[in-house]
Image (cartoon, rainbow over all chains, first blue to last red; front, top):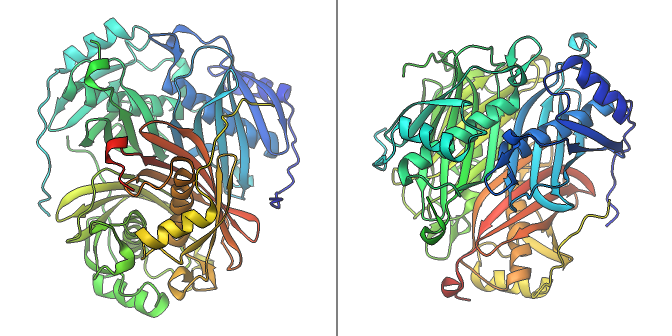
Length: 149
Length: 149
Length: 149
Length: 149
């Protein structure tokens, strides 16, 4: 099946990503921890889900999974283009197909196309290694002169 | 253009919806306030957005808008079928196209098709009456024998 | 509800759009006829659906509706920015919720946000004036120096 | 990364799928050829793209890719549940990110969740083995008593 795939060079480590979030998005700090980046992918884990992330029956809420998908996509981009705070989501699609029991909730974003202006990612969401949802997340990347740092 | 449209009968008031959420989803209580329901629509407003709903530059975060869209769709369904806690999102698509400045952040869900098993809604999101994002949200409705109350 | 909405000025008539397609996309010519444009909207009708657009039971196929949605979005953009052949779809989402009986099959695209690089539209699809599907279609607009004409 | 994944048993061969289409959807026959099924996946190739599948510059049209994605998803489901003509698409999302030059145009659908009523697939689209688009396609499966054959 050997598809030709792009080779991606990551410029931020998981620690650098989490540090960048702590410094620039204090409100988001603590939501997730970045587990690893590499080969165009970034995997993160939901940190200590709070009461607001849960639903009756101890399942993880849909909005929590959406936020995790959006976060994984953003971190995947950051890891490849460096710390660009002004990158914004342009569209997100998510299919939910299994009830995510509370446990290890993780998201893995995979870069499909890193263009000059748009970055398209596919994100899989897992609860204890079982696939529970699948997302597509596109971000708009500001032109270099507006990137700030 | 007079399209034929369905006539919907709402069985829950805004107050009943907010009360149901307070009783069954305490973690979600206080996130939004339901402004009105009618003609197959439900409009809600983000309540006192907290620090975690904001981004640098005082804009409202993407996940906050997604959560608001998902919530408006759910309440629209509740208003039409009555209090069914186990209804779950099966898919959500959202396009973001304007930066939502902090202000009156509202979402209006419109029922497109209320089937026996799936409910499809279109949701528009506004910041101070300016359209900032557009979503499609589909919920799965449990069969009557599993609805609980 | 009086939302503030943008005022759009259309620069192509239905006849000009259909003529542009005939000249530049001969393969697509005859697929649809443009009924009207105005107020940020464009409405088109499926022309003489051929055997390949149908499914057993004389319903219109999903791909035919997707193509019609994509076409209506494109024409809506054309009507607002003028004849730009190189505009391309970046993403499309569609929910199907009623079986479209063969009859007057129409799509109406509404411009949600016409930016410099992206145009976001909402498209409703009708069979004999009954809403059968709902789509979101985003196009990428080439920068002015690459537009050709 | 060893995620736990489901084991899928395929009940139709590529030849059986293409024969089923020829017999039940004559209008769709000849559009694609099924290359292989297995491990929850189905891969198909666009057959002799006609003039109507192309765009100026000899690229493959967006609607052709959407149709191919929808078809691959359908065949993936068929291969797993057997010949069920009345299965219908409930939603499709597609991101286009590279211009698909005319060449070997293929789609590979992967089953994410085969439920009793909904089947969720992820579909990747390739032009000469380069990923050009990514889709999510959900089908509604009729209850057994309405499946016919």
